[in-house]
Image (cartoon, rainbow, N blue to C red; front, top):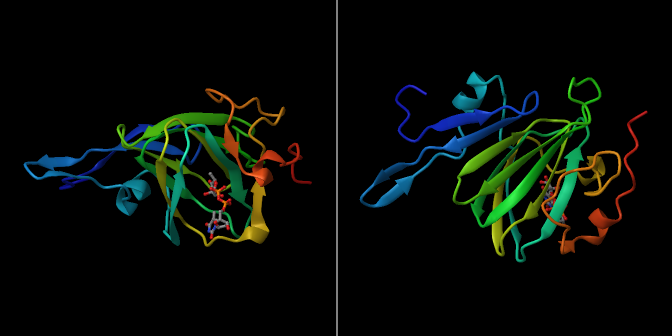
Length: 185
Ligand SMILES: Cc1cn([C@H]2C[C@H](O)[C@@H](COP(=O)(O)OP(=O)(O)O[C@H]3O[C@H](C)C(=O)[C@H](O)[C@H]3O)O2)c(=O)[nH]c1=O
């Protein structure tokens, strides 16, 4: 962006509407300053993202698996995911029936060290496996949490063969018991 002192740089667009960016910190004798969200940058990429909620997800142990979750319309949300501490193997799964990449997944390694940001489009399931103890994740989401509209895909659903570096050691009973995926009627 013009005049941006702590800009974001686009690294990849694995799926339609998805983006992987990295922060380019401004560094000086005090330390650094980095941007982890920029509406102007996302709009220039054709991504509209209003922020309705900001969430912090902390996982104590390496090998904690969360997700994969998404919210159905009218609660569908764009998620902007950044790792503030530790590291994680993040997966975005395209479940948009009309998408040319329906059923395809995109893995991304996020860590406090690589300062990467993943933009998860509406209609895509999102989950991650932590790769370090005490991993902290910041989510900016574009719609309010609506448990009635939340849906899930199990991490080992045979329909998708999602690539995890190793099996989860910690997972919620709810996520472990998610049924095999059935496409919306
Ligand atoms: C998502 C959410 C949850 N909650 C409450 C509901 C539960 O009482 C508690 C833990 O929720 P949950 O077990 O759904 O948390 P995760 O399994 O980490 O869920 C997340 O996992 C995957 C990786 C995602 O992409 C979503 O951001 C989100 O669904 O926080 C809220 O109050 N607001 C919220 O926005």
